[in-house]
Image (cartoon, rainbow, N blue to C red):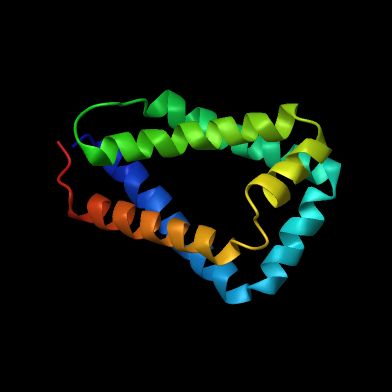
Length: 134
């Protein structure tokens, strides 16, 4: 396994675990925060720019589509982050709100999304810390 894959797996995995636990522990307060954020167009722009930077960094540093599940999952996380940032930056704010609250039903499926992030984080963290770098 490449050292970059192992590092990104640990980084993304720990981030997903800590973020998922934090937002799940705060429950309704997190839903209210996300709702307020999506109502604030300037903050959505800032969020889009920050996630664009993170997504581009991951895609440029790690665009690996072979070598097992771990490198592909790390690459997918980078591409999903990049695509999500582009949606936030280029779609009208109202459309982003409809996507989150209508299509993705964020308020109703909040804990499901948190659980998915937690499972992803556990997988990436475990795989990153148990993999051998070459």
